[in-house]
Each structure stands twice: as structure tokens, then as C-alpha cells.
Length: 141
Length: 287
Length: 127
Image 1 (tube, rainbow over the protein chains, first blue to last red):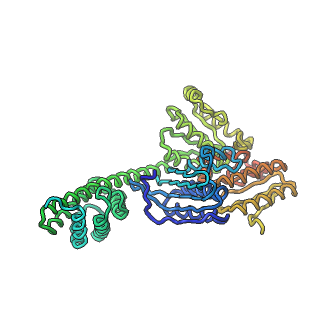
Image 2: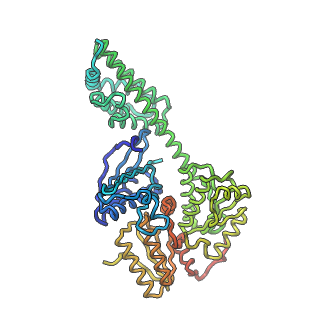
């Protein structure tokens, strides 16, 4: 994923500090997805993924930032790239974070496994004490 | 003389691209004229963009072998050039021919610029290497652009022709097409869901008569379709389960116990009507 | 500050709608008001119209599931109506199951599910 990616245009940075930021973040991602020409269904998937990620950053990570922008790969495909970063405690058990929370919907699990299914490329960078950065890309088919 | 420093060659080339830009643009655009729908002015604009980008990259420090892939301006210019050709449906050879024409144009300019044969030789090698990799990229982008456009058109046709049938009041039927890739399967699923919404259907009969074999991919698609239909508030009946299919499903360990299945479409319709009559659904509370 | 989301009452059924942009505060206020009215007004059915809701993430899903559970304990059956195809497809891919939440295609079908019948009903099987 990474070697192919190339940042083509400007990427907007959005704060994720207070609850209102969650809504603003969703709007920004929706706008970016519309501008990039994604179908309604794909827009919905991207925005839902963004919603999960920023909520995680807000609830588990003590707040952070979200960056959204268009990328292109070696074959000229267009994609939308989201990066959500927080300086929180980091995820101690990555495996658990990738699997918990969703099948029952209960609890405050990270639900990253589900989010991963909504995107094409998924990269998680985390360690206890080092914060968490999740980078995802959804490509236009 | 031999041993001409690469840096020196690049500097000379960059200077040439700057000084001769107008001529190069006119020359190259002229060679492309008539090969496609682009106007003379558009061709010149594209040519200017690309030559500017090449000048910047050649005069820079990125190794020649990596300029096309890694210099943002060059890559952007080549990519949009190719995508435009893909969009208008240009001949596949058009990209290669245009790159060859550019090479000829630039080599001609080198000859005009210097008498030094060692310099000419080194410069020609450099232009060759640069434009060969440009040719590779432009063709790849063009090809994937064509692929994408064909797929999109196919998708649109698929969407228009997804055979969702109004079998009865509030009952829709749709054949499950087992050989679709996942992207197209999504298109079909979306069509079904929108049809359910538009027709206020209560039951969607998914007919798998036309599916030759059920493998895990097909089963996955089926389960997802049923799941999505239920989330929207309608119920599903799967029809067309043949004994051999039933065996395969069991052998694969796929659990369809929470889905209502019937052997024939007629049975499925009767079941659907009964479900509506009852006013409840077996999975009336999802999950 | 009031929830801002309108809640109508039809007999012993409450009908509320969620809008396209649902922030956390609004969602929780909505839930609180519904729960209170279910308890105080002898409500036996609740219809939540989500036809304008563009995104259901894990938070919204939890809110709906908890509301359904709370309502059930208080003797009311909850139906979520009008889910958009794009949302249904996304939830399916996300692997989120709305456990314990009944769904209907639209508010009218939700009403029928809750036992409300239109006065002059045609013959049930007219095509």
C-alpha cells in the first residue's frame, strides 16, 4: 500500500478535540468523498469508517487530529486517504482491538476490524505510550 | 569528450528545454494534431505543461531512472495526459506514438543545440531513458483508465439490467448471479435494495437456480444480501436450492439455518405470501 | 436545551425521527426523552424513522440497541424504519448486527408491524 501511494494534492487537517469535532470531521470526509466522485454507497462506507476512527481517537486517545485528502497510485487510480492520529496511551493488545466490540455491538471496543472491512488499505501504527495513528485509503473502483 | 559529467549533461538539457520550449511545444503538438479530438490549443497546453515539468526534473537532482515515477510534476503531467486519452478512447498505440514523437522532437533539438558529439551522445541516452520510462507509465495509466471506464460502463449496464421482478404485491424476486466479482456484486445488491425501497416490498425472493455451484464466495454474497435486506426491514426467501447444492452447502459447513429456503420459485412465492399475511417475519427482531 | 428532535404520539405509539446529522448530544437527549415518555404515557410501541439518517456507526447502533432494550423492559416494542440501502450495505460490511432491533421498510409498515391496521384495508392478496 504505502510504496504505491503518492500524495497528489493538499490534505486538510481537522482537530478531534471536542465532541463537535466528530460531526465536523464526518462532514469534511463526506465533502471530500463527494468531490472525489465516489458513489453514494462508497461515500457512506468512507464516512462511517472515518466516524469510527475519530470516535476512537476522541474516546480512547484523548483527542487528536484527522487528515483527509486525495491520493493517486502508480496506475492513476484515485483514492481518498484518511489519517487519524492521537497522542493517547496507544493500543496494548492490537489483536483484540481488531476483533472486539462489533459482533455484539456492546462495550466500547475499538472495532477496528470492522472499520478495516470498509476500506481498501489499512495501516495501524501504535504502541503503549506512543499514541495511535490509523491510516486508511479507499480507492475508486 | 568522453567522461562528460552527467550533471553537466542535465544542465545543458535543462537549458535547452527552457530556451527551445516554444519550438518544442509547437513541434510535438503539431505531430499529434489530427490523431485525436484534442484541439491544437489543448495539445499545446498539455505539451507546455509536460515540457515544463521535464525541464524542472532534468535540472534537479532526482536520478533520471526515477524521475517519471517520483517527480510529482512530471508524473502528474503524464498521468493526466494518459487519462485524457483513455477517456476519449484513443487508440492504444496513440500513447506510444506520441512518446516516440516527443523523443524525436527532443533529439532534434539536442542536435541543434550542440556540436559536441560526446555531449550529444550522453544527452540522447538520457532522453531515451527518460522517455522510455514515460512511455511505460503513460501506457499503464492509459490501460488501467480504459479498464476502469469499461468496468464503469459495464456496471451501469448491469445496474440498468439487474432483473428485479415484481412477482406479487410487495414481493420481489431476483436471480443471484454467482460469478460476479465483489465490486459488481455490490452493484447488484444495491439495485435490489433500492428496488425493495421503491416497491415497498416485504419479501425478496433470491433465486439461486442459475448458480452452477455454491462456493464460499457465493455463500458469502448470499448471506450479505440477506443481511442487508433484513436490516432494511424486509424478509428474504432463497429459492432454487437443488439437492446437490444443498449437499455442497452442508459440506462447506455454511450455516443457512436462519434463512428460509425453498426448492422452487412457486413454493417461495407461497411462503412469501404467507409471511406477509402473518404480518410478522421469522427474523422479525434481527440478530 | 431540548432534544430538538420531534416526537409524535399516535395512540399508544410514539413516532420519532432522526435527522441526517446526528451528534452525540442530540442522540442521548432523544433517548432520554423517549425513555421517559415510554414510562410515563403507557406507550407500547415506538417507531424510529431513520430514512434521513446517512450514517449509522457503532455509536448510533449502540444507541438504537440500548433504546430497544430499555423500551422492551418498559413494555414497549421498538421498530426502526426506513434504513437507506447504502447504510444497510455499510452495516453489513462492517459486520454490525442490530441485535434486538426490529426493522421495517417505512413508517407505514412499522405501524402494521405494531398491530395498527388501516380502516379500509383491501383484500390482502391483490397483486
